[in-house]
Length: 339
Image (cartoon, rainbow, N blue to C red):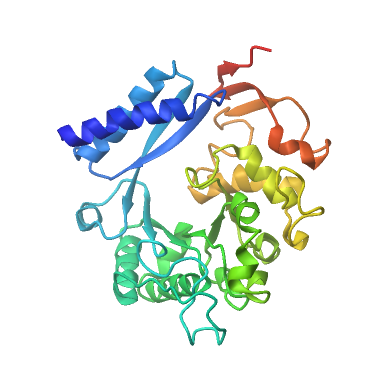
């Protein structure tokens, strides 16, 4: 417990310093389901410390979540929450590296990672989560990993058919085989995607995976046109938490210098309305919160910002540099720019 609290104190200092450059921010912090667990207590304490150290500028909202495979949580059950698992990076194939024979395509890197657990066990744990009524989110970046995730969901739905209605997600859905993208529809999966990944990776992605496979990478319009909900996010701390960076990337597919002119694979650009919806209403829908968040209308929390220009009318090149003039949370003003 002492070690956990020491880490919390250090994290509070780091977070407070990291967000000092931003005008105001509300963050969400997940903790495991058991409120008596040191991690859960640490999450709550961290939110209190950061709010104190930033003079209330940064407000951390703590919510319940769990790692898939936490058997104690699965047995006791959550009142609400999301089961989260990484199939890529810590548990299976790394980015840009499918297994030989899966796609009849040559390796561009001979540097495969190995799964720490069998896919059968992953499918069983998904089933356990669905059986308890948990929404499941699985991280997958490479095309092989995404295929394995889709296969695992399909297998789990056979034994837990009601689980298909829980708004389960694939986090990143970054590089997906063209033949696998349509599978998101019957599986009713949400593609939780981070637009800045495209503009961060565009200088090297195609060199790694080739011209054909890049067609299913960062393929926002392919998902949107088939009716798949795309929930926008930042993947902080991998990318900046600034949502205007994400909106800019989604709309232009250019870097902040305007390169490449016209955007990288611009056929996958989002419209401004699609991008804003991905970061607001559809992100809220992905966490079962669309009745209280995501739009401004009677009966919902009045969480909103005022900005220095109209992102729908002004040139898209200005979006990433948008400045916040006021921040309101729950109908209460929590920030106002000095000038």
